[in-house]
Amino acid sequence: MVCLTSLATNHPPMPPRMNPERARFVLLKIDEILAWEKRRETERDTRFVELGRYLCEVRAGQYWRIERLKSFDEFLERRFPDSRRKAYYLMSIHEHLPPQVKKELRQLGWSKGLELAKLARGQNGQEFNCAMWLHKAKELSREELQREVERELTGEYSEAYEFVYFKLYKSQIPVVDRAIETAALMLGSEKSRGYCLEMICADFLAGANLDGSDPELLFKTQLHYFKFLNSEQQARFMAAVGDTAA
Image (cartoon, rainbow, N blue to C red; front, side, top):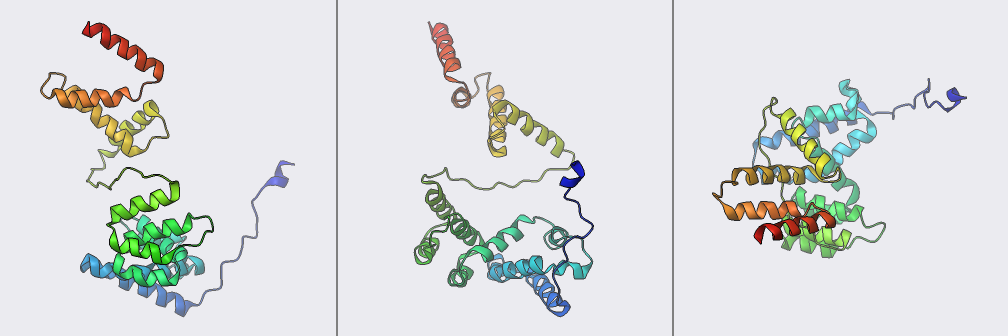
């Protein structure tokens, strides 16, 4: 009976019929757009809408087969060696935004386009108010637009954030990953990696200032830790502090 439930098959689905001439044209256009990386950032980003459209066509038509690649991911690894995430972002913009919005996005940039695509995708079938959100995208900074979209989707504002990039040597990565994983076990697996890293840094700062060199920083660090305690532990902590002060 177990074998009857097997999903294995000797007849996998046939790949879509491919027009080699069209496939070569699309791949050439993708390489042409990516070659603009040596130019100014603003100039290159004016073509992100076009790039997203071509990438979606490559995935749907499996054009990567013409280069004898095994998968679409392998195709992206070659074209986007630094980060495949941006490729998927551009595809999301093409898939979820209507044509009238895409025309305007050339002046706004792909990062704002991504926020609008996130909103259009997350409105559960409600009509996307193109005019209103295009106006907001033009008037607001990327961070402000990000917060407005978050509020629209969740009903509340989230704390402003930004991405921070720095270089790690390969020998350092296991140490950093292990530290973040250990912090996640202590704080809760639902916590983000950024939050875990903040707590690791807070712990370091607390230890570095035990000698009283920066009492204000030590105070803020300990106050931050206090939030992790449950109500019973917080009460015990306050009682212990009261006894010490007395």
